[in-house]
Length: 232
Image 1 (spheres, helix red, strand yellow):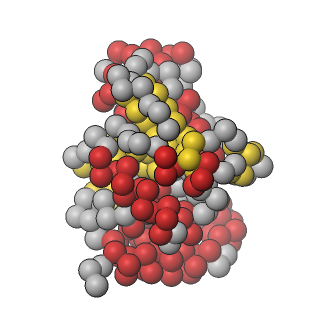
Image 2 (spheres, rainbow, N blue to C red):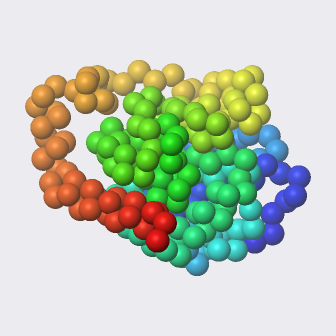
């Protein structure tokens, strides 16, 4: 894939089971920055279905030459993705040469499995934070967390706060605030239920019931990915 040499390159690698808001929210913000080129890539450039939407015209991840900022989104497929050696090879390659290595939601599990979060503070969706621990990451409950060149966002909608943080870093606070104004980002949610400490016990129980057996399978996948990260 040919990239403009004078543009700041941002790459979103997506995979089966990705949560589309994890990348479309920051994509919307970051694509409005001056001097930025944003690429969404997938294994072999395949179309990717996500929560009823199908994303087409994607770049072939293996043919993306480089990036200045790598942003890995999360999703229900994150645990399968971090056990996909071909996919992880590209994450490691692009992340190794990037100025910023970033993620949204459970995308931080993929960064952890790639070895980028060992000894580093990182955010994740509240329901899956503890899965960072087997990789030697330091769990941080912040909505946006920075540790050196690593910037991680919490669950799903934190991708917007993450994106404006990144935009301010890349382009400056004034352009970031102008984009925020243009998108009328002034959150005022109808319910105070977006974090477990805010939600009622009934809401929390309903959510946990929906997760069912996913907790055990994700924990097993994280432990396997962490084992693979250890030296032979």
